[in-house]
Every structure is written in structure tokens, then in C-alpha cells.
Length: 159
Image (cartoon, rainbow, N blue to C red):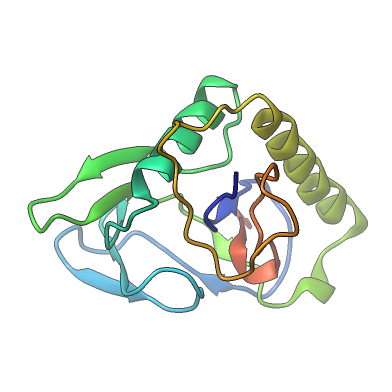
């Protein structure tokens, strides 16, 4: 099984220069740039909206499993909006635009979150009809992974 790419966010305190995402007016759509799998992605208030694809139900099942497993660093699926878009919880934070400014403690925290993600994923049994849309094909079908984990797909809460 393959996993679609989504941002796993870790919220913790640190210091650094980042790309700040804050809550603005709840009724204004803001396009979120970057990424290489989803088409136009929008932030609207405390939600993220993106086009529904053949892998959306598989991603929903995976996110539900992560939540039920006690993994707290990924967004919750919130269903569909009136425009038919997939709606996810927006986790306020900042992308790591300057990874060189992270401390050893910051890096250890990020590594711990990745470890926890992998632990939670090991017990996931995808639906029989699971489909995944990935930019990078894995070397085997048994693998469920983020597949695009990097500084721009990781968020942190800085204070």
C-alpha cells in the first residue's frame, strides 16, 4: 500500500525565521502554495480545502487511524464542503523555511514525531479499495509512508 503525501505537523516552541501562517478572516480563501501532489489547495479559516481525488477516501481512513492510534500531529478529516472539496483541519504553525536555524533539540523533536508516525502507521490496514496518488513511486507496495517528508512539509509552532 502507498500513502498519499500530506503534511504532518508538529507543534512545539523553538526559535527561528519561518514562513508564518496565522488565522485571518474566516471567510477569505487563501491559496497555499507548494506541494507536488494536490492541485489548488486553499486555507479557509481553520480549515484546508483541496480537490477530492481517487485517493481521498484512503487518506481519510489513514488520518482516522492515526488519530485513533493516539498520533496527534496530523490534521483531522472534516468531510466535504458545499463545493465538493475535501476539508481538513488547519493546524496553525510555520513551515521550516530555514532548517539550519533548528537546534539539536528541535531536530530530535521532529525525529520523534516521525518515529511516532511510523509506529502508528504500522498497524494501519488500508481499505480493500484503497488507492494512493503519489508523486514518487515507492520500491514496494507494502510501504505506507509520507513519501515527501522535508522541511517544507513539516510545520512547527514557534514562540
